[in-house]
Image: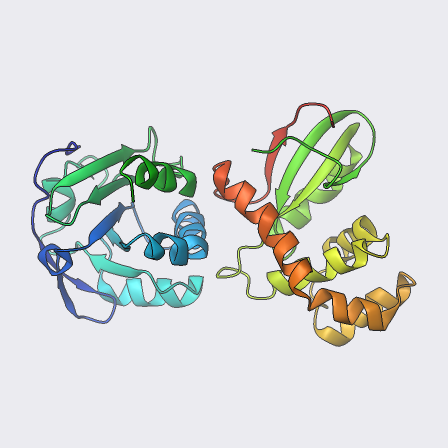
Length: 153
Length: 143
């Protein structure tokens, strides 16, 4: 996984509405990249639902939340609607997993990203990284708040 | 995570078991009967995941309001055992069956105090790293 202090690789991916989104769009704000394996798998669903519940508090600390998986935008759209979430979901679809790979978050063996969080600061530098020991373990929202607190956000 | 205390909703005797649950969650409904059969002091903490279960906040408010008239666990049992009939008229039916003062139930379930109480439990769950429901934590003895 990429480490704190390293520059966050820029990327351009399409979101659930087909809009192009680049990491550099978030310059001047913090952004939390939430890498996750797949839409609709039971474990992912709880993770993004939980984060949705505290999204206002995360936003209040000046942090945008963005989900990234290898699913296509159409799946992302359906997933958003199914979960009732409005977190932007980016399609790391083609080339498959290229962005996850750039962050060291891609699991070649299974063809999808791991479950990790990468906090990028206002200047595009990685500030904090958390990688779940296993894809089944969902990082609690408390980890995000702890990371923001220690960053003085 | 705050240890079980006098403010908490607790039922039963034995080792403390803190349960963060969502009243609209099928997994919680399935687990609830089993949890209640354990020889434990079960502490129920509200954990409505509204984005996943839009009706959850209303159910938690209903349980909390029922609790203010001494029927917290009865309402929780009712909601878990008889799932699906949770529109307002059904909630009034349940409240009536429990012998609640309906007017008081109505005004309290819509009150900010009840909302805050539910939110407080939810926040403690977030701080404890709860990421799905039900989430069970053996707790230290009740203060």
